[in-house]
Image 1: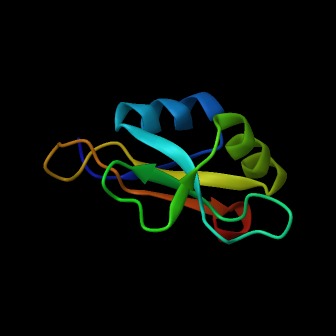
Image 2: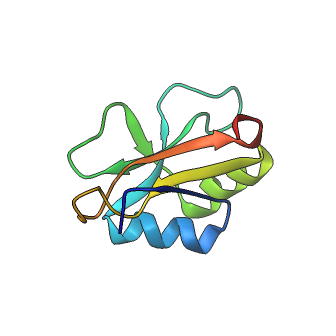
Length: 92
């Protein structure tokens, strides 16, 4: 398999991908005005100002903002990839 990217808004697919890589839903601390702010996926030892959020809160914001999850299953050499980006549907 190659390193091609996929896009989804399916909650189960996103959660599967994240949990298979020991990640968790998160947001950038200090962002947002009355909500959780900018969504990200956090991985162990890669904090970078991220704070965990529940899957319910993550997907509530994700759906409310009309977001998509851009991700890669594998790297070019066949290893599990952690590449991901949360984008708006307008960026497609």
